[in-house]
Image (cartoon, rainbow, N blue to C red; front, side, top):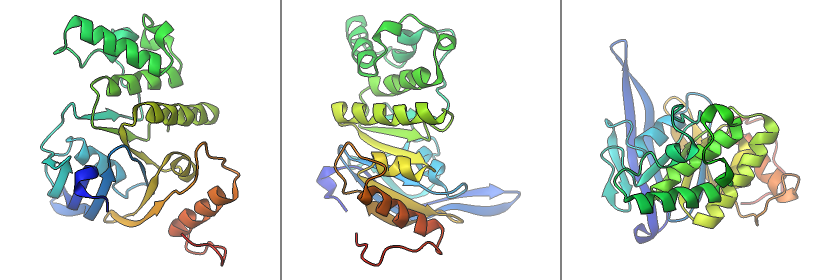
Length: 260
């Protein structure tokens, strides 16, 4: 684990249960995770492993749980501007143009500061020329870039991304992976991204958190010690892919000389 003084996010012994038809369903159990400031962490797992629930708890969208979630040593007790959230669907407000959507959460800022922040983050995501467009005039990838700009505009301590590229076609998805990596390198915002795509996780992350289901637990945390930009056909990349696949498919055989 990282030193607490360098931690952006700490999750300690987290447990989350739901009541289903009068019976208790445990979604998460014994989750411990420490994310360093400026780190890019990807959480992978199959459907039902609780990865989205974990992200929602960190975001303050699931208020009832056991254990602790600390953002820079302060307990998370609900949503707040210190955490940005990007969902699988862009969820832009259709009656606002692009700049209106990006500035929607900045009502407490002066007009000058709001305009400056909106301009900065539209430039960052490469959409400065589309500031007056409306959501229906954007492609899926462009709309998701607006959603990322909106989440970053409050300058959150942590950006939470819930399968943000899952609804995009394959080529757009790859381009968006490159975009989010470029944004992360420019801003160094701490990012936690949930995905079911193992290649996506290896391409983006400093560490990959592998979850197992029923109840959701952290099975393994894999450091991704590869230089960026990463080549998906590189030997080290393919070895990490085999390692992570083996967590889901035990019959997969790893090279005898593989170490991590």
